[in-house]
Length: 348
Image 1 (tube, one colour):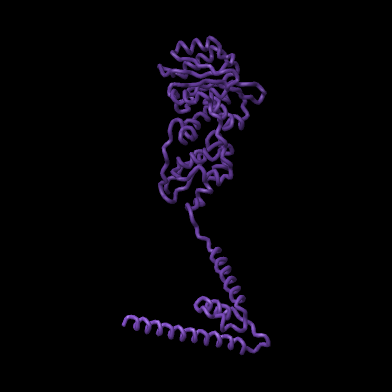
Image 2: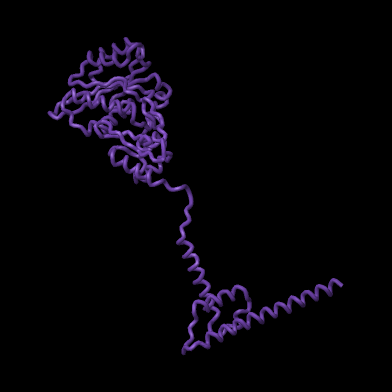
């Protein structure tokens, strides 16, 4: 009984398939007659005709048996051309993937900071943006500045010693500043390793051992002297200076000959001071140099972000919150306009 039922079902399926094939064949022949009946010496196939045969090829296996006016390879070529056209049109529709693009306001702000501060790089601009509450990566800032990342500087061999004792280490050094009349002024400074804070800075034309000793006393008042004091082998730092340092219960540590990298924190501050201000100012005299140096130290301690301090100034600077969506970023000039501090304007 089951065998007869299965045979009956297969017969009905074959009949239905034959009728569907017959209907599709009839449709194919009528379509070709329509093309041939057009009033043209050489009938041409339109886009609708090509679309008909492409779709018929997809639903009917025996479509080649009824094809007369064109070759089957031609229909296959039409299908491939349609495939290429489909993906060409789809590729033109750009689907945005990945992280959202940085807003135009932030991009303009990055370019503005770079234009107003010629010596700033991506780390400095990124630190200033963090203080404005703008969350953006330093890599994004670097990409918009079109600046290649710098290679990390060579690290000294006793870096572990400095890290383990930076709270108890200070350094001192001298560097020269030329004046308009081609005289040389000497800038003496003492800097703490803990927060890169300059404890004392002054200018003189003739640095003597007595003058340096007095500067050290003013740098460490009231028992605030560190455990170690780094200094190079400058002839100005003679035995009198070393004796005064030891009398303040400080252990002087001299660097090796011609090894400025061993006093890296002090050398880095000298580079920053020259690059940020001294290379852009014509110093007239000692009084002028002290005024410029005092303005720079205020900016350095309160405003300038530091890469080694997690983009924070030595005296710490709180992150500003945007008061309202209408607030704009306002730049306050520092050091005569060489640098700026950026804050949100108050709501109107």
